[in-house]
Image (cartoon, rainbow, N blue to C red):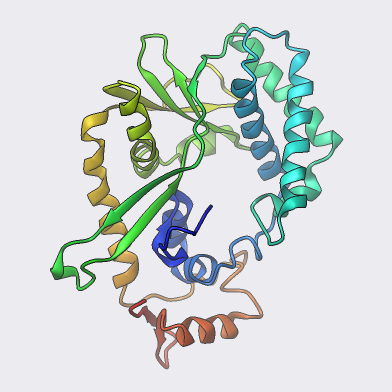
Length: 301
């Protein structure tokens, strides 16, 4: 994401950042405030597979491949894989794709093609057309409440869904495609609270500019193409009200008074051999204050 607008990384948040803070505040500070997210990221085959599928559905829409025979999907998957590898090659610093590049091979492309083709066939080769490309999305929040002690701060929400598709009833659908190794567990843990709100907020201006008044947020599952139960409809002219929800979440992050290490065995921050160095770096940057019990609180940025 670009950081050339004067809003620092510490004040810019994606949906994943909010989930990260809820799960382990220390890991959030290391990944988000110290910029270690991609440097410390560990990829997996499933993560690579889901990412490849998501890139492929975007390319499907971009190339207007509607109605193409199912055999065409293999070419689409391979082109998406090549595009992802090209992005990694061009980047001088770690990125999201850096962690999964070693999994992007012919076997993965074959598996992704099989999943996409099954999805495509289940819909009788009819995928709803895109309204437009999503592109990079952002929403700037300015604080003006002196009671927070942070009046005049500027924050940014960034990210976005996978596609903007046209519903059969003429209502635009803000769509996020999901691949889950265990589909039922994935559905049980699906965030249908913050996710619809942040994605709708990020794209509402684009849709309003096109003249739409309503939109529907939809989760589509690659392994269950006919499940239409994960959705919520919104009045686009009222979506701006969600800004206050994210403003409160951001203030919570900066005002958290005390927390401990999660100490999960798989936590890359808590279990890192550089944990002490991370703490020192955060303290030196006045991002946290550490006491003798290893409880720490964010300081002013």
